[in-house]
Length: 249
Ligand SMILES: [Zn+2]
Image (cartoon, rainbow, N blue to C red; front, side, top):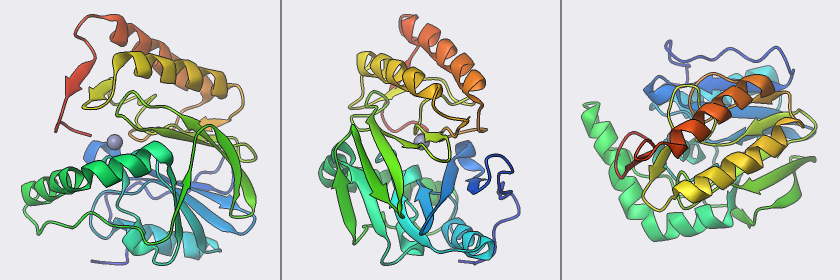
């Protein structure tokens, strides 16, 4: 483990809007977003490579302020790796994500272990956050002294939470609206729910300035709308939405 950010990561802070920082891991261009709230940083999801979560915490502290909460978009392992770098920090899970972690924890851990072994290193265990707050989407609540909305977006998987920061104008939809991945309907998800998730996300775009998908470059609302229309077309093509278990997250 190292506390220094790995050289390959995209660790540059956003310039616009200010107070938002996104890092991108090399595998699948997985993103982790931090939004500055009145009482500190709120982090969404996680980087992927060993050492990167600790590196992100160091980067955030260097910017000023501590991390006061961690939000999770869904219970695929590549979004769950932040808690060991944030001991004692509250982890906010949407109800379906908490349920999926409870039911599928060992299977999710096995996928993480397989990834690590494939990279030729010792397998990490799946983090078990100690301080969990469960919320049920849709909801609006206070975290870090500011307002956060959670919107229900199952479809890619059986769970799915889109986190919206109304003051910063940031939307973190999880594995939707990705410019680098086609719609993936994994085990537990459904094409119908996926379509409903896109409808819901479309309605949120007018309220934000930036969308940070779970994989790939951040998007303007107009850019996100283009990806959304592409994904609708792909979902309509028979057999086009990939339906797999154990594939790339
Ligand atoms: Zn993912």
